[in-house]
Length: 178
Image (cartoon, rainbow, N blue to C red):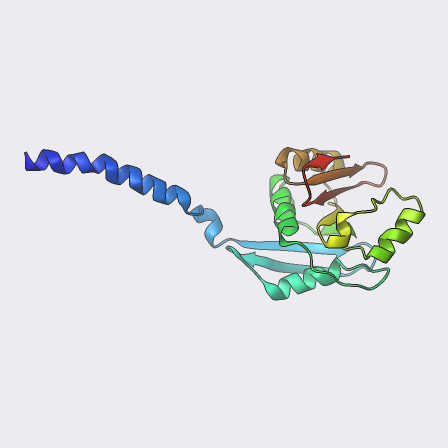
């Protein structure tokens, strides 16, 4: 009789263990180094950094990213949203891209944004570039339409497609597309 009662607890223990394990991050991402490589098409600068180890962002790498994403017209640096970097990293993983991300536009100062709007280049007055939450880029060797479609499927934020200029925009705003 004692042995039978002991076995009654096994399903309870097993289900508790399943709940605890499902609440933990997957083992594959716990110690994962997240590496990004960039080339700024306007300044010809390039960097490769590990911006995140596991769940921890690397402050020195983020500073380097902030700098290469800077408004090159006004030479102003602004913090880039780490969620944007995670979105980009996951997008690169989905399209199996391991090269340099070609930056068209990262951070834009309000002054630069205003000038670009005056020139009629399709720039939004409240652009998320001014908050460090948007990136215009291309990936050499990856079809821009495929890149756009993959980003849209992720439903992580805004996705803009600029077919004639061969780049897309991703941002950490609400899910939308243009």
